[in-house]
Amino acid sequence: MDKSFNYLISPEIIQLREFSPKLKIAILASGEGSNFQELINLSKSNRFDIDIKILITNKSAAGCISRAQNSNISYKVIKGSDYENKDYFEDEIINTIKKHDIELVVMAGWMKIMSSKFVNAFKNKIINIHPSLLPSFKGSNAIKEAIKSDSKITGCSVHFVEAEVDSGSLIMQAALSISDKDDLETITKKIHLLEHKILPLSISQAGYIIRSRFMGND
Ligand code: GAR
Image (cartoon, rainbow, N blue to C red; front, top):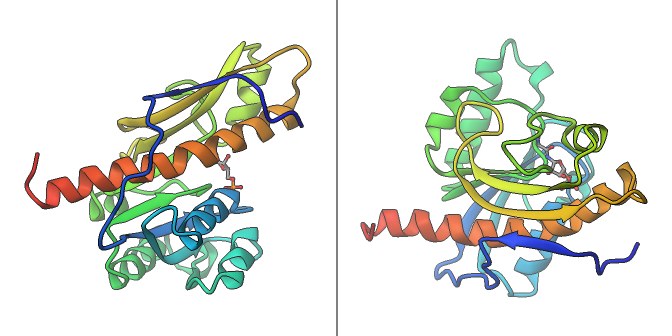
């Protein structure tokens, strides 16, 4: 695919902030984990001061697991079906995150809707990446829905997580146009490329906000 398509990122942040000590993050992922891999690559090459303390996945065959294994990152599979109810499932995730002394929780392809109990356990410390220009096309089929609706524009968004699905203050968005030649595959690939740009930058922004709050600077 031609990687030189036009896009627009807003706000126009281009540099990752420095964190000393490194920003401690947990990744929640349910799928392939290409966004997770981008974060691993940036961290390994010392281009981004993050410490990925743990990957939590709710799918035992998810691609993100082998990415964690290949990079010696701790991971835990926590499947909803192994718990009596959603409350116990979420308790396990909350306890796992708490054990790892995390500053920021990053949902990078996490396909499970979480309750307000989970959101409140890490208030203003959870961010999510979503493959649409929110508030358009919330939910699990965002790219398909955008194409089906004959939209001429779509993109991806990173936002702080609130109890309501795919809501919460936006941190960054990237927009691209949909042409007649595009289909689900080409748009999905383009969105992924843009996600790999805005997720690290958004983590950097969120980390800065969280650390400033902690230092009482805002
Ligand atoms: C990404 O496109 C992300 O935006 C989407 O899942 C994909 C995960 O890709 N998330 C959602 O749809 C959440 N509602 P990855 O596993 O290759 O990082």
